[in-house]
Image 1 (cartoon, rainbow, N blue to C red):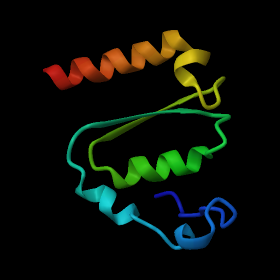
Image 2 (image 1 turned 120 degrees about the horizontal axis):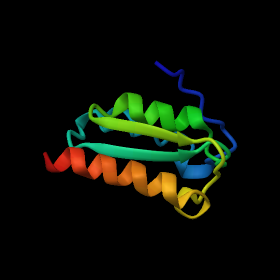
Image 3 (image 1 turned 135 degrees about the vertical axis):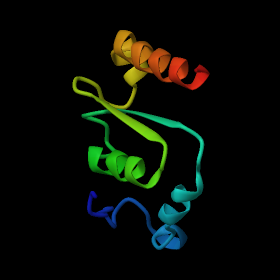
Length: 89
């Protein structure tokens, strides 16, 4: 499991201690996480989400940042289509 290491400079004030991570375990629906390797949210956070979501898939697109659907639309749509087809069956 990925160690929880959220930087304290991301949230301040009332949100600095806000943590709903454990609640992710309650989500039973299939979840798809498509993450860009160079996103400002580090890949470890995406992996953490995947680890807490019982039915999640994580795909990290190597040459993308925040806008995976624009930066690599072919890969994005292939991943999305594959995920949706699995849900249909």
